[in-house]
Length: 183
Image (cartoon, rainbow, N blue to C red; front, side):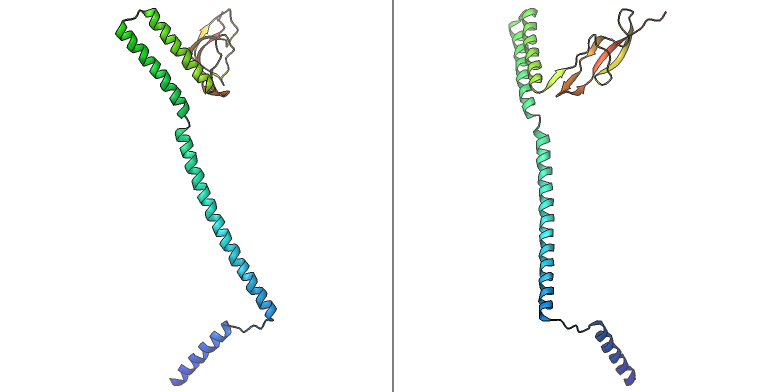
C-alpha cells in the first residue's frame, strides 16, 4: 500500500513537471516579451475605454434625438397658438357684439390668410390640382365624372386639398377625375 502511495506521488510530481517546462531566454528576449505583454495590456485597456466611450456617445445621441423629436414642432405649435388666439377673439367678438355676418366672415378670412402664411413659412404649400392631369404621387382619385369636354384623367374637382412640405407630399389631394363618356 505504501508503495502504491509513493507511485501516485511520483506520478503526480512527474505530471506537474511535465506541465511546467523550464525555458531559458536571453535577458533581452525576456524584457522584449515583458514589453510586448505590457503593450498588449495597454492596447486592450484602451480598446475597452474606447468601446465604453462609443457606447456612452451612442446613448447620448439617442437621448438628444429623442429630445429633438419631442420638441421639433415647438415653433409650429407656437404659431398655431397665435392662430387659435385669433379664432377665439373672433368668436368672442361675434358672441358679445352680435356682429353682422360679413364682418365676422372678414375676420375669419384674415385668420385663414394668417394660417396659410404661417404654413408657407414652415415649408408647407398646397398641391395644385384643379384642371391638372391626375398624378397618383400627388392626387388620390375618390370619384370619376363623365366629361366629353376634358381630356381623360383631368381633375375636375378638388374634394380635399393636398399639401407638400419642403417638396415632399404631406397629404395627397382627394379629387374627382374626368373620364370619357361612353357612346
